[in-house]
Length: 195
Image (cartoon, rainbow, N blue to C red; front, side):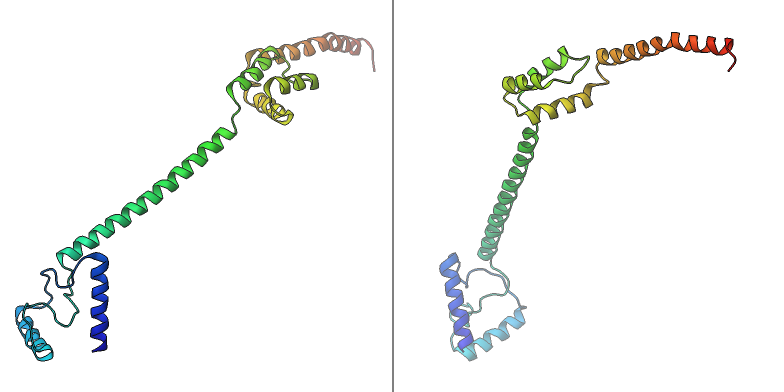
């Protein structure tokens, strides 16, 4: 009997929390024959079964319509909370990725100053220490940032810049042509002098 009372107290607590009474609904768990037998057993135990509800306080085993409605509502609220939580996490991750992308990029006016120097010195894009100091003052960047920008810019554009590649080719030609008379003289001397 203590178990029945404890169950009844739980149902009362559930009803006070949810507003759903345990007797609501039409869900049945037994066939009609079994139901009649259960009614007679209940009558023996309780003595009265006036309204047809479960007098032992257990309630129906299949959820009633209102219980199903409550479970659906709770399920929807939990889904919504989970979706909201995941959405917030995704937004946080996306913002962090964008922040990291922006962190590696220099402001446009700074980049244009460095590119202008690069264009004006395209034949030999290695700034002197004085040039670097001036660029630090003009751009507000640190010396290390200036150095890294020029290293990266040379990697990106050294061979793409037609004027710098043609300058290298002309330097190679001058070097090769300057040795040509020397080689011709050496060949001529070898043919004349027996060694």
